[in-house]
Length: 533
Image: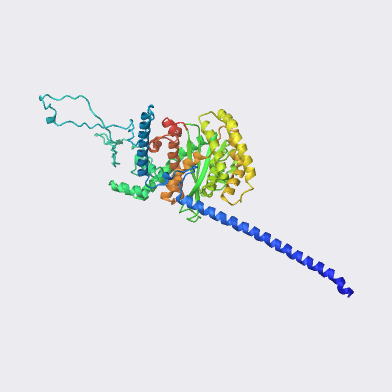
């Protein structure tokens, strides 16, 4: 009896320990399930945001505007534009009528009605005079001859289609009629491609159509055939490769000037090259872009490379020690560290991530992405005010207006970065802003550093658009040639020049220069007065 009583407390204690252990195990399982549910919810939310973003990229507008008017997305844009003009005209008429009835002066602002745009005065004019028939030049009353008392003039825009013609270079030979010795002949004209029948104008035409207007060579071949000239696509391709190789010395002259610039923008994008040694046709290669130079002497250079590694910026920048503006790609870190470059970030990329976060927000609701976009918009408003200022004045204005905005943004970022899921669209935007903060705020201490890398993105965009049409390059030589011609075209555009006229000048002048002649004579600002950037 005594033993059973004494063992009862031990049994109760053991049972209590077992119950407590089971409760702890159940609690741990609940915590694990809650963690798993949170992970599943985060994964579901991430997949949902990716789906929303994919739909937006495929069918939404390619703009980062905060608000996009629905009218901008309609396929019947022309009809809507006409209707809007008529409604605006009706509103103006109603406003004028109401004002007159109320005894108020009518508004003086001009109505925005549709109408013909005045034709540019610099275009050449061809006059076509329309006369009365001879029998109608006498008065019906007394038969007197009518006199000219004035004229009415209306202009219409006339287009002369492209005309293909052949230029025959006739080189006459001379010899002595007595001894029939010493035959002399006029020297052959210098040509960019001596063994081809392509003139400088034709090469400039083909290059401009392909690299500026993104017109593939096979379509150009079809167009030439319609005009009576059969030029195979392979011939056009060979001309472009050879032309790109011939302008290489000029590209190097542009590079020397670029590396003297106080600030350089850089960017890169993918390119597929089909026939490359020891590489599969599907392997991605890259087209690198650099842009810089003082106003009126802007330089844009494209360079092809198989890699996106940090060795490429090291090769391209050499011993450059100025300022470098890029996106958040870490491949530039090596050359920055090696050369002691001042490395600045791009607020346009930071803004783009908040735009994506805003896109996946529930409709009709505002959140953290809206607040961040509003702050970034204020930064750009300050830059708009400082656009025409010198670097010292621009930095002073930034100290006054931009620095307080940055301080507010930093405080908000420190509070918000740990409140959202890292893999969500908003979390990615916040972590990008946090990781790039030092580079993004470097513009506050240097008036020469811009707010973003848009000059590089604007220069590389024509290549990206063209890539959608011609898709890939066949060989590395073709990729290098494309890079050279793109460089000349985008450099001309950056300086406010006609790419076709500049290419024609280069293709005509380059063959006439000797080995010791200065290539600087071919630089855009040496050829024509350029526009300030």
